[in-house]
Image (tube, rainbow, N blue to C red; front, side, top):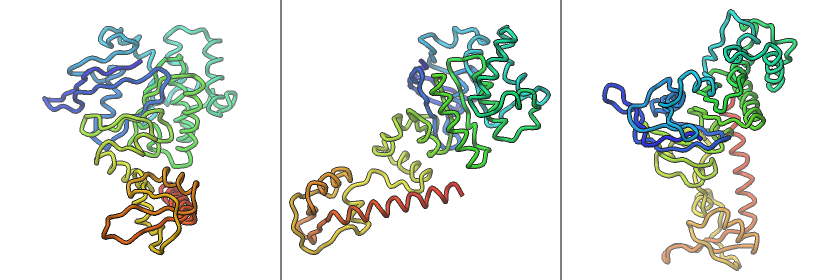
Length: 326
């Protein structure tokens, strides 16, 4: 649906996005993530021509965006910012219906759309449609900002760190609301964040960016299990305190879950055997021997080691998540 073909954006001769090749599928929740200055917001804004590309081509539904009428292009793209940018002199309903009114929707259609959208984010239409923006909490304002982007039924929704200023509880609630909305209305969402936990929770696929270039594109599972390079590994460790990378028998042994006492075994495993394969081997037999160098002591792993490892792992992860959300 959205395709970047060798796109570059320069400011005063300096490339902030360079040689960018990417395809975002129709109906996909796609996340752009990276540190500050990685080019993710610039990439997002090129989609609706808030920023014009310097080189290359950007396509929506197979047509170059340069060939779109800019007004029609933006009417078909909803946009949600961290700053929300609601009009304080308008009611909730007036804010939501700005674009439908420009498109000359009937009053009945606009009223019905406001009702549908407010209900979809658990805001009572009768209670909220006539309220002033100043009467809303930050979370309520951001919910109105999200549904305003959906009001005219656009095909694409762009979201630029929309929850960055919210407290963790409100943020988590809004993340769930946005996921439900995306599934319900089947929109293509391009979402910018610097928070790896948020990216994993929301994204069908994630694009990790650094210095204007793509480091890796994949599902959360693919990136967590197979980070493409040291930058991605370090970024994961920074964003996920409990992240250890792909776990292997070596990881297992490093934590002390093994014994050097001779133990009856049925299978052998290597130090780089994955934890999944180790689990399967121990499911088949009570213990395994680890293949180590000839001059190293023999090591054995029992099924009980696996049980203790997983118990400790779960407790450590829950503790880290609580510390992050504290």
